[in-house]
Length: 195
Image (cartoon, rainbow, N blue to C red; front, side, top):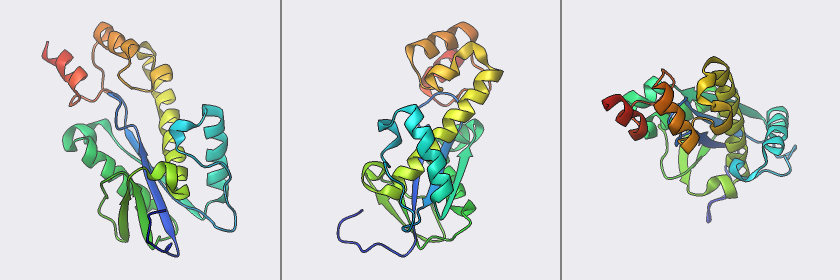
């Protein structure tokens, strides 16, 4: 937790998944953990094996006082820019919570506009359990969405790279062209559209 601060009564952790990909929406999650029902093994979602991440996501949804997952679309990303779309997804997640938090702790160095107090916590996904839990829910929800999109657009191998600009994805993008799940404001996609 941030040094020098007492823990507010109800802290909501907030994190995102999917800022870096060139395809698909950006997701965010908000989680209020129940201190009477601790979730063991919370870590930054990127440090967890997929099976462990999926198991923890089930536990978080079962044991948390409240949780919500939201997203911002490819069109919103292209219209607003990725930072503003991420903050929008975060705000949507917090607003969907069934319990109002006293304060939201946001992973990173930017905070969305919220009706409660908000604090940016750099590296929070590794140091604050509520943010770690949000990281896990955001990541598993986005991965599930990318698998759904893979079923609609199998030519892009979204099941393997989840929309990130891997060499495989870039090669397939060049071969098959840009489709409506690609972020046109991102440089690799923009370059192809300009050809």
